[in-house]
Image 1 (cartoon, rainbow, N blue to C red):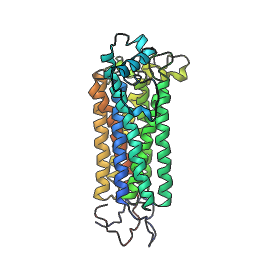
Image 2 (image 1 turned 90 degrees about the horizontal axis):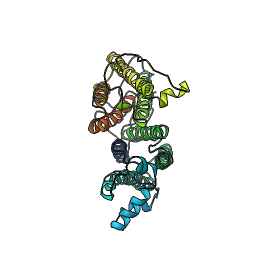
Image 3 (image 1 turned 90 degrees about the vertical axis):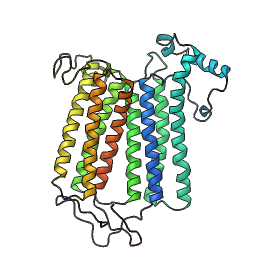
Image 4 (image 1 turned 45 degrees about the horizontal axis):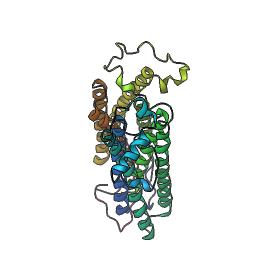
Length: 367
């Protein structure tokens, strides 16, 4: 297959003759894809931590010494006593013994440790690639930005935990959603820069712009799911397609003040997420159907098929999670499905760009 792929008659003009794309650096790309996979796993662990209510078990933020787990019973007792001084223990988990505490501690410990490991796996190869001059100037600054975002994500995680250590034994849904949203931004950026390093495609098209619009809707819908998780709204109104016996249930936006209802009222928050999910499903189908009328290459068309498959999986997981009253495996799978849908849409959006001419020294097969 030629390294130049034509997208469609409605796409932007093809690159001018002789335009040259940046030289692909596939080792850099594979490293970024690996880090993106680690972020995906991090989101899954975070969902598991949230659903098991383990996230408030560690009440201190120790960025460096926090990698050392409890080594003896004295360490466990010290951590247990710290936890017992905060609202979650006092209002919900006062029944817990030290052994019970260990079960929630380890999940949060792994969650934090995995985040630190992502930082190491990102930074050390980054320095190596910089030293080897394997990264061009523009990409270098993008990666420094990603490194800073990763640090901010760690700080956001602790800022989220802090909200559950004051009065109520639960984290703020606003901070939880911001934490999740930043993870999605990092994941998208890692994939995009990685794809550009693997097989550079420099020119936006009408089709790729449609992809960006769809991706924005998908992320917005996922963030609405963050509010559902943040206030445990998925544990009520566990029927589908009707909600409380109606398509538009009585009581929507009956909250004071009304403008906070989409963020704090259980019924309104869940209703918003349901209808955003339905809209996303319809828009993905429309995107996929319209793509069939574009003059796409087989790989570009495959990319749109992946988006359709991902949204069908995610809708199925979402309905199943609701009907099961957020059964733990389904709840975690639903959060993972959101990232898969984001990932496939990012991939499709990139593939729908027009490929620039590759350097003569680089031969592409099926890009």
